Length: 305
Image (tube, rainbow, N blue to C red; front, side, top):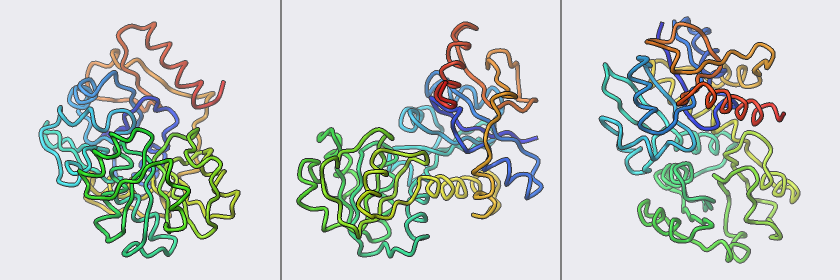
């Protein structure tokens, strides 16, 4: 059986296993997808090779860090400086980025014409860079703003998009058709700013966010990060399998939840070779005590207790 995984920290909350496993089952593909919390980018790639994982999705905070440990990197991922998909081709690890597809498909899905639109991207990390890259390539006029000006300037210059200061946004919001937020759920750089009703927000978060709630308060449309997640997953699925899945399959799987009462977790160091059992999460740790501590952290963040 082929095995796939999503790597991140934290990671138990990830919906990716539900999306992929449902598609595998529906399309009669003998494969299983799980969650793995590695210690570092180097540890991440070592795990893929040791356990012969056929493909992986990468999330925070490893999208940039993992790059130096790959054998090859796709043009899009190189331009974005972030990898969210790794294909293990006979021990050669190849990095891709499908986040930019997730962004553009999510916006086009609601009927917004990207070419010629004016888009504000909030953030300057790999997710924000992917958004700016994908939108610019489809003809949008992209502006990027971030709390750390130096990082925003560096990312804007690399991607050939405009930079705008956060403290000047209130003067320019009427100019934008779409805002893409690649910020953490608790962040709201627009606090106290009146949001024009015609703006649409694409929020990277598929859980409620402060910014999403704030923008809704002005009557604006908010596209959930669920759409971003599903569309980037569909693109990753094709890289992994060479086959197409579809939006309906992914939608049907999204609402499936982990049952805490039957949660199956394992300390990664107990595995000698390939993954043979279906786990909800595998954790890389230097000791059993560290493993237990990490598992408790994951459970707390996912279930809120």
